[in-house]
Image (cartoon, rainbow over all chains, first blue to last red):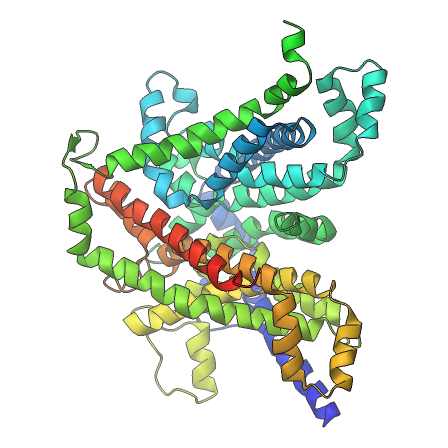
Length: 275
Length: 290
């Protein structure tokens, strides 16, 4: 009976694992096959990878989309980490009644669904476009600006700052460092793992973001990878091999981040629950 | 001047950028959306029309479809996913199980894909001559391909399956790490008292995981209320409006049809109200004893 249960567990988990992995397998295999073979349900790697990639680079502006996605994701991650860690540190290290109240108010913004502020945000960017086109509609800046200051990351850094040794701050003050100096020279280096975990989440969020870029980026030269894939996916005569190779390429950065930094990845997820 | 910037005042400098940012990009839009919801007109030519937009909601068949669909996804998908995630985490928490790391990584893997990427993959897998139909026909489970994407019933099922595939492993990780904090001796004591595995699950595991289950339920609920990427890329909201969600309807009202920002803002406030009500209910239900 016990052995039977064991076997049942393994079968159940194996089925779940196969269902979880199969779409990845199919995605990679299909990117090496011709479109006809993909439709016929071919499950083995083929010889059309180079051809698919050539088609992709010839027919679609994938280089532009990739570089746009990277620029947006890197800038977004950088500014998110900088502003959120400053704020998390500020709220925790310089506590006061009014700062706690402000913090609670900021937390409320986590409940705001993005779909409900998308129209006003679009109008806001529309209004500044004539005077400042570089941060207006259709600019890469507009694609990441609203995602930079989010309560989630402020909360995340504040929670982690609780574990930061306050003695280090006193030591810095005695050494004559300014408050900002303490933050940049002492806090930042000691909190490396916290920054790593936050960086992973921020990068993935930005890399995968679809709705806001769809709203704010309009010309083909400003397309990001999710926009490109969404367009390809809705084409009437899809070249499956080519599309699958585009999807594979877009998945590589996040998959690499996941496998290389698995520990930080989970730490980043858990950071939202602690405390 | 120097004294002014000492200690607590310098703290405000640290938080300043974030406070300004959240105010501009979250709080101001919320106020603007509220004002917009009482206005009507095309594009930016808006006039105040009182409660007209709010009244329109009740007679708008597309809005009612979007609301019903969103709730269908919510009621079926969220509990199903949480139950699966709980089962996986309990099974994988057993230290005598072989290949635990492998199973865990495999089941979590869907969570690293972008929503658009996996949606397009699912769309192709479930198409008329797609891999799923081929598989079911080879096994002789069905004799004719199912129109997964063009049948209003099956299209909803595909959306639900897709979201479950993407998020079950993600939620499982939360439960797994919470399970690691439960002392094993509690289970041993229960076993000595003759508690079955099912009893251990409902009497120990679930109560101990209550806070984290609440957390994942709330985040999943908020996520489902905002569902957009999957529906747009798998079914496009169709057939008819059989799979359209509230978020997609807001997008269509603002950017696909003749832009009507005022009414779009009204629909978007419905999501806000739902998020607040549902979160409050979940807190109440789960937090009854504390």
